[in-house]
Image (cartoon, rainbow, N blue to C red; front, side, top):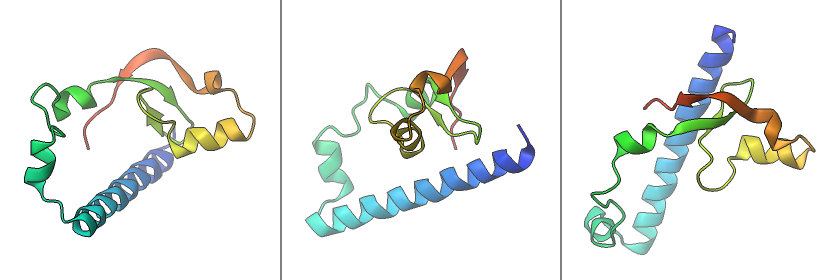
Amino acid sequence: MPLALLQDSDTQVLRERAETILWIKTQMARYGLHLADLQNAGCFSEGVSLANASARPICFRDAYGHAWDGYGDLPDWLQRAVDAGQSIEHFRVKRIVRLSRL
């Protein structure tokens, strides 16, 4: 894959991450939530670590470097492709690749 595509993909991931963090901060402010509230609700249980979550194998990837481990809802890039008629199997990786932390 060309370096420019990888860099664009990295930029997109960082942009989406920043947007997600802003959304979370907005929701927390809107509902008067603090980190302790989330911890008390079990959002950060000891059984799940960021290291383990980032080590999940990639199951689907597109030509732009977007990747998905198959957990949770379809990411936007994959949902758009499926909505456009592309088979999800087209994006399935043939070998296991580990997600790396940002």
